[in-house]
Image (spheres, rainbow, N blue to C red):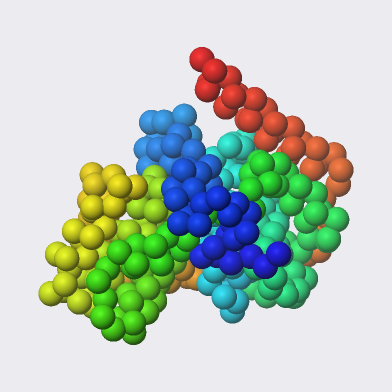
Length: 300
């Protein structure tokens, strides 16, 4: 079955033709609250090291997916955040982070049916070069962490729904709003302040930002239409919109931008890399310990 970023669960459940089921299960496709809080505050159980880890992996994903549809990078980073939120890597080595990025890009490419030669993209720009067996082993770890939920529910799933609430007489206006909102969503993914919001709230906020920018005279009407939706928490919408508005005005930075040198990029000589079973076992054991600890905290 073809994977559509806007309609990831097409034909999976015909009982919900109005997409209302997406609002019910969207939280299952988000990183954990503790993970997001940790990225924003050093005092949480996740330390500032986690922010550095995310920056390194996202930087690698951006490098690997550069030149492809931005949806590839977006989906891969979604996998990264969901993996890291449930599997805290204990002082990970640079090759582990690079392998995680490569594996998430590979999985996203498979979902989007994008032909990507990993050997070629790995050799472009420097870094480790992993063989297929090592990538496959890490892919299985990622799949386990995501509970095989690869058809991610993202903000793109909700754009058409919210646009349908607007009373637009001219279809091109709706297309323009959707296009600009999509750009904002892609660029906003790297802003950790926005990770805490549900995909639907992110989509609604992006549309409001697009409306404010493109059709300011109709902004009040658009805001009223979205706020009246029973699925939308008005307080969360306001907080997300304000955070996104600040970022949108600053340009956010391209979704495909690689972090600056101050973000401690991986700086190693190119070399082919094959992970031994013992090394991958250590990575797997670390993620399992983290998962067990997470389950214990939930039951307490």
